[in-house]
Image 1 (cartoon, rainbow, N blue to C red):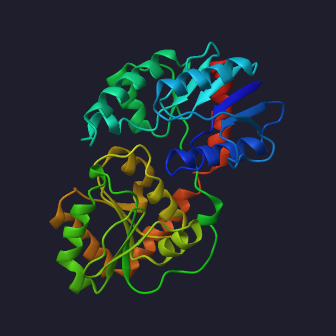
Image 2: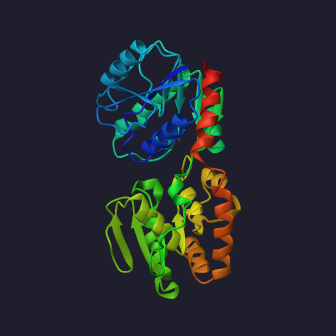
Image 3: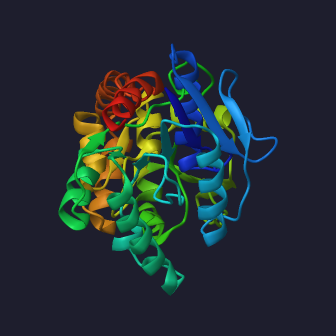
Length: 331
């Protein structure tokens, strides 16, 4: 079976992590299948995956045409779009839709919601199978977009987060993620300010260009090794998002043995189960939970143990095997 995969975002965060993990695992279990990654020259395509050089501006008509022509010329049995942008092609398509946050949350660009809604509806109509990363998003796809034949293939966690290694120093809470409004970093900062002195801890913000402040450390973007060390040493990793499709930082934190605090967002509760404390996204409630974790070492140990056990089920090899099965369903 010849499967083409749009890998143009392989170097990005978010979808890029999904593409890297999926391609790497597919390369190891490909058996009789042949995978082609469509990506710009120099993209880090794993060995064993054929690299088809394609480049076009993201979120443009040009990418729909250019990528579609490349897919048509490659004699494919199936084309996999790893997010909701599906090219103009006569090849059967499977698409991964990670979340519907663009439809639910405020966006800085007023045209972005219209674009996302149009492309999401088109992707659902055109795809023979829709993949997503959690049951929470599957329910949304079915109820809001009328999607059918939706298969859940949860994300994996990179092996480095399961390994033993150095720990960050000191007492600190950790946030890993971007600064988009639905992440509620402002609520986290307000909650931390309420308990900073009692907890005798700092707050580390990674993943975007945050500002430091009293007790707040903002190293910005960090590499995988440094992030894993920060996870391992944290009093708790806090993820107070209003909405997520999966919640990869919470999954990585569990793999590293870090206690986790999340909002009650459906996907985060689904992901973390009994390995996290779930709280309303409100400063007082979040502050109370953070202080409880900071002052209770046995609770931290319990959450860490539960997290490691739960994280073990989220591997890229499992994601790839489930995706490969979906390819056969879609053919």
